[in-house]
Image 1 (cartoon, rainbow, N blue to C red):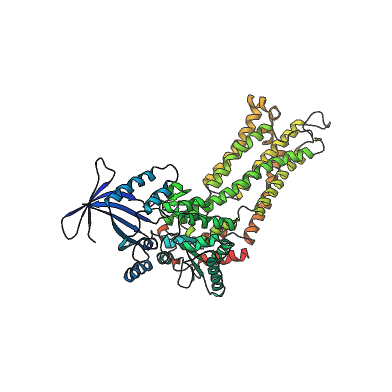
Image 2: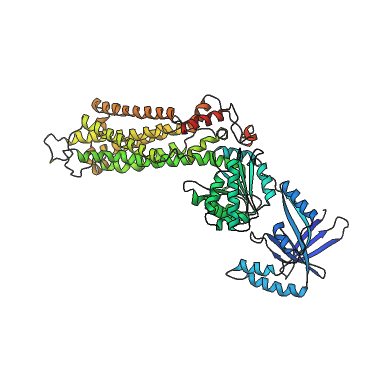
Length: 623
């Protein structure tokens, strides 16, 4: 309207502020003294200031139209209501402004009680709201405002990409219903062919159940996708109704998208907790940028805060912080997806390698000549170096720096995220396969050298054909085979097996293995720590008999290669399908800011594209 804000100054010796404004029609300055400011809260949904100009004291309040109508002496006129509806349908955020004149004596008495409420140690917010209610009533409507809440760059494209990854979207907001629906349409969560089912203006728990049953009937006969639109009155009532939470969850799962409007922060959290309660296997992720989203972020399994213009509260309460919404795509499809596979392989590998090592002792304990005497199968100092020095670093480097698809390609194949949703890398079947492989490899690593070049005992009081030197030579061969099996297994599970970091860390592991062996066999410290290995390492790497064992035994790993190859042909993962097409040159790199620019016009894969082929192939595998 042309009003110019000139200055804002703190008054000396007084708690208030002085504002200077200039009207557009004249050069005269208007001076206002701010006596008290009643801040906005999510429960009150309004903000008020008490100011003085000359001898007149005025209370000015702004807030949501649903709240302000109850605080005004007269309801909004037809013209104002039409403007509000028009602005909301255009996706604008609206506010209603109202004011009233106060008596100076009342303001002085009221302000002292408000200051006392601010200093309470317990129940401060409730006390402040109670005192504020004494002045926030009997307003006269001054006008309305509408502000464009512009979407960040790349939000529609990011939402489409994430939806194709198999992730369900719920939009929880405090905006008006019309505003929220238009914003959701702009984000392409709601499309023109979707049937919108609205559950609004609920009067109680029984009414909420009736609305749910009516919505279910509409969904059963609907053609195409369904979109749900809820408001705070319905959410509050349905959560109190018996069985309402389960019905709401079932209805929401049958829809493509769900938008909840006019929600308080606690209602947002309760909806997140509803999903967690009814879907024990699901993982909830909440993302927000304001203080109203803090409860929601803390209630979800993973909370992501966006560092924007609404303060740092959401970032401080979150698990992960990003600067823009579109960065959620690389966070999930690149970092999150790879982290899931890394953790899964790491857990299975740690268990696998220790079972492989333990199998030697288990078999040796059952061999007839030991008589369960408690003698160890491998040199104890080699077993001590096994977890940290020899096999500790390879899994960290090989899996930590493993790369499958380039980051620029990943947004073109959001279906590869389905591996985490379907738990392809860590489940009962995968766990059993790793354990069985560990038993098989550990058995081979011990029995082949033991039966080929070893003896039947390790203690002098047992059979007459005892040869301790030959036993420890075979034991050292077996230990080398254990490391060979473990490193090769890790190498087979790497998506970049010939990368420099993978080759170097494997070489480092074998270097540490032979350093420990030769250190124990040819140094004075080694002679004191492990006298049984004196002179043995040089023999097993120079005698053809032992070299044959160390060459032939790893050939059994060809069976693992065959199994992994056949499994990839029979049940390929979405990532393997995408990798095949990438290697054939069917997927071209696209910059992040232009990601999925072709596909964003629809939520379904574009016919004839590599993305559609990946989805079709993976659907056959899952079926």
